[in-house]
Amino acid sequence: MIVRIVKLTFKEENIATFEAIFKETKHKIRSSSGCSFLELYQDKNNPSIFFTYSYWEDESFLNAYRESDFFKTVWQKTKILFAERPQAWSVQKRAILE
Image (cartoon, rainbow, N blue to C red):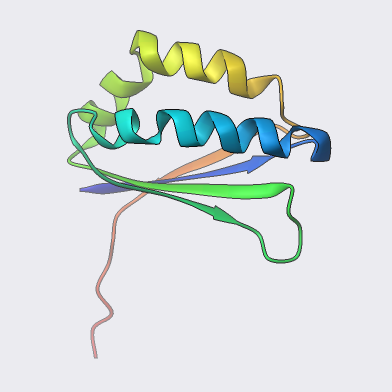
């Protein structure tokens, strides 16, 4: 399993638009093949910064989602709202050994 973390920074006037897009699309993202988890977080000190956390069975499922027409349509609507270029990481959960 991989965890995908994406940092999104929006122009302040576009926050409500992004939240509406996320609300409209989150169920379809969550039901994408290989996706088992999706949540949205907002920075406590800077309301223009959001993070998405999603869990994918493996990178092939994430890549298939990113190549889908659905993703491309949502991304076109979202990317025009940014104040900064998004940042993304694919990470693996690690247990802390004691």
